[in-house]
Length: 161
Image 1 (cartoon, rainbow, N blue to C red):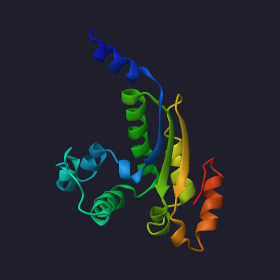
Image 2 (cartoon, rainbow, N blue to C red):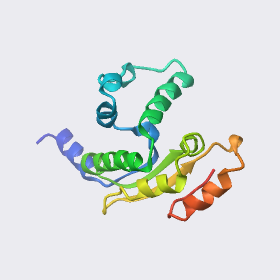
Image 3 (cartoon, one colour):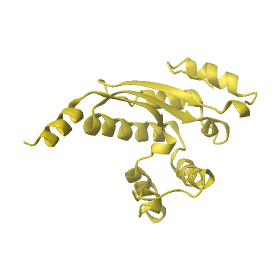
């Protein structure tokens, strides 16, 4: 075995962390394809290794379009998290994950934040520690958010803004 192969094997075997995972931005393509084969039958250009978005707005539009289509219930969050965590654990040997879900899904889609947090947390494999954060831009703090924080904190999540 070459030194490069030994090094790759050694790196693969090392336990790793993922400390900045946005669930809505990490939706597994097979789940989107299963949901809507006509819309998601082909991966977008942005999946090419050399692709660059023209603007953050272009990136955000693509991400939010998929999130609004898929993230319609706590059960869907659980399904996505199971897929994501399994991939992280089996392919990359990730043992610790810090992940977040978007406040917009709570505010605009009216999905209960505490249920989303619990669904994501319950998807963790037994040998992976997962911390769930509620992602909220502080410049948009609305009156409903403090109560969402309180409910999310009750399910063992860290709700910070």
